[in-house]
Image (cartoon, rainbow, N blue to C red; front, side, top):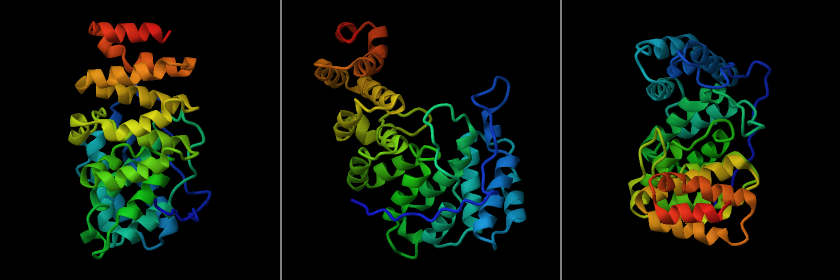
Length: 291
């Protein structure tokens, strides 16, 4: 288990993220969530904690050729530009990014699109946080885990954590097994959402599509989580499993029926909704028992 250091996070009044819509707006491209206002504020935040940061040049380089890029492409593009303006040693760059963080999200619902401000930060970890070549030959794994532990309290690391699962499955899963008991619901949700075999907008985890059993320990732990935000992830994760291993998903949900609370019954119904819509008789029967 990793020993996490306490972070001395800056609380300067100018350290902030721009306001954004509460949800996707009709007729407004989602990619505009990462546009000049966000890039400019990111540069301000970084210069506040790292005075030598070249704010104007960073903004200029980020905005060049950004117009045609999708949201996910913009996140990766900004991360790549960050690599040119932060210290070359990954651990030093991460230390600066961590110092630039705004306070953690207090709620699990209603946060809108503003937290996407931190998408480039997560992309930076995913691309540069695995290879020791970016860290003067020293293994950056623990630094990357610590960073994701902090970033996911502000914007989910469900996408970046997947690179670590693919590259170092056993090592990463051991960390997630410890995080699934964390007091922060954003951290607990990451354990379920980040390990989904077929997470939307993300590359599937082929190993878990083939054999989802490594994540069952997490689902068992979180199925009765006090936060709907986490339970919904568990249900969607089981729904992913059902796409490739319907019998395993059904067996799991059946095992949860005994003495199930109304909240857990909702998880079961939600998990099996797609197989039931497709006419799977056993899924229909299990969902009826979970009423």
